[in-house]
Structure formats: C-alpha cells, structure tokens
Amino acid sequence: METIVKAKRIGGSIGIIIPKNITGKERIMPEDTLKIRIEKTADLSFLFGRWKDIKKSTKEIMEEIDEGEIDD
Image 1 (cartoon, rainbow, N blue to C red):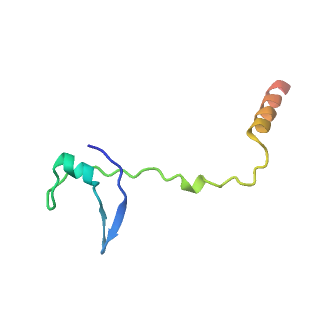
Image 2: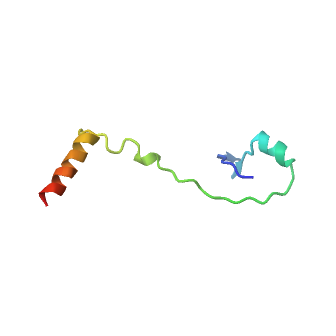
Image 3: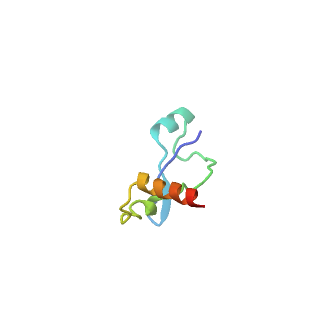
C-alpha cells in the first residue's frame, strides 16, 4: 500500500504518522516491524509568485511569439 505522509520531529528524531485507515487495512500495531520506501516528493513552492512583475497577459506573449515566427 502506498500513501503520502508528513515527517514530524519527535524528540531528536524524525518520525512519520501512518493514517488510521491504513493501519486498519494492513493491521499494523505498535511495535510491528515495517518495511518502508522513502521517496521525497518534489517541492515546487519556491516557484509560486516568482514572476509577479510580468505585466503581459499570456495572449500578448503568444502573439509576440507568433509575430517572431512570421518574420523569419
């Protein structure tokens, strides 16, 4: 079974919380030994708001691109 979880600081370590619906389906109990695969998801949050100073609409930009192709 696969799911996305958030890492949490627990004391000096980092732990994950397994959602209750998964622990129920898989019958996972405290102290069970589990095999997990760790894969960090891509963090693209740094891109949001990056180009706020662009004042042209997408339509205007596309028209400029089209005009450039015709001139060649």
